Length: 472
Ligand code: GLU
Image 1 (spheres, rainbow, N blue to C red):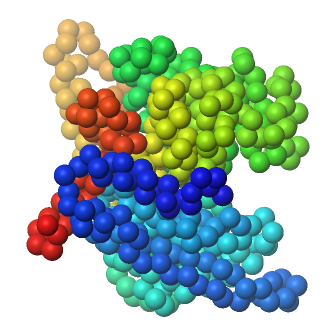
Image 2: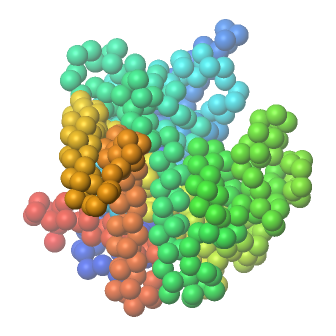
Image 3: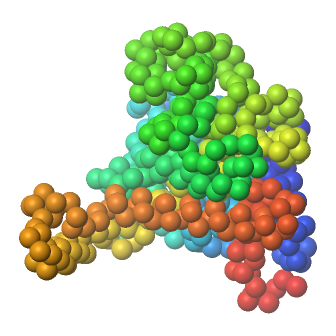
């Protein structure tokens, strides 16, 4: 894994850099930095062929300064305790940066999901949920998992079903996990939320002429040359929104290799090609790059690592030819690479800010579950009727003016759940970006956006401890 240090140590190195620029006491900073609890589980599972296998899994709750704790569950053969703790810490800072009222957590099951049947994955997921519940590591007010690398709404549906079965009759039980299918209490817009948040974050950064000028780039997403590593849920949606906004996808990377085309790739066509042939390679009109990680070194304006941690490290950081790194994944840039890239004037949009769209919409889903009411249900029609009255009055007063039925429908349309979720997400990402940028400016631009985002996170978390009278 990490070439220089363990992952959690790298997160803490970034934390320490930010902490040194705050005036909180070392005791308080120590409390924020440490991981509060880690649960390591092993349990046996019966494979379809009758063999018994031992599965290893974790759940780390990094910070209980706010409850519940929150964070995804990943299924990957690379999962280990250090990784889960590091990712849980990133969740703590992420939630603080976008003002989502949770502590950070993360879970992991050490399996390669491609080697297990659906029935086996279901048995593993249900047993893991049972183990979490047994030790009070899951619950709407305790710790709320979500999808992450290798998991999706399907695993969340098994988790909520197991939880409901075991707890029976708990009023807010649906809020025990987010990222659920809509029919089981999920929210519209959650699937694409992280990718959409990544897009909003990049768009916000690219909208500021003075920042773009410093990088030698034009303002706006339109025309930007983008390379995306990882076409999973996050990378795919981020690429889609970027392409829709006029960006050119000049490189796309997956496990099996990468493809490049300076004139741009059509994302949907690439996805169809991969589905049909089983590989991204061999896409008509593109150049194959057999070693996938070489795609990170393609010349571009925005590089979007959307796969796993530690992809950009001391060894390759000097060779990158991008102006902006948009960290859609968690921890894609090592702490050493961070320093090399800062020196080279590369702008890094940090993970704990940029990929916070997922947990932001998870928060909306959790609120929906606790309120037992779909967003927009009460006001949608009322808003439409009020707008209609205004439009009709306006038409009456305008000489000869009138609206067609179609225009009236369109202009008066009230907001449904999907509209409200996207609006809340857009607002959240914009505010967080400007808070981060303002903090950087307060430090006379001597610091980078990652440090600025962590300063903001630390300050917000510190407030939660300020009235306790424990810390100096
Ligand atoms: N796994 C996602 C993340 O890393 C989402 C977490 C959540 O929604 O709780 O941010």
